[in-house]
Length: 89
Image 1 (cartoon, one colour):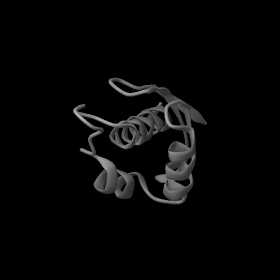
Image 2: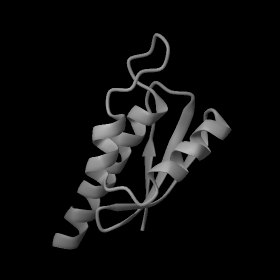
Image 3: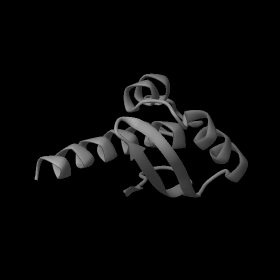
């Protein structure tokens, strides 16, 4: 199932995340730096949610307190939490 996270404070507008258990199956960004975000999406494919969080959480962009990688870390955690809640129901 695809989860969509509306980003906050970045050039990208949304992040689409598909998980396979706790592993990242696919990531797609709406907006932002096209080539860089396609590269990040490929690099995190197959990583776990915890690995992505550890690697990317807290990354900033220029003067901003967040970045697309930081927002991705938030997005994958929220997707995992939502997936876990849905499996309980």
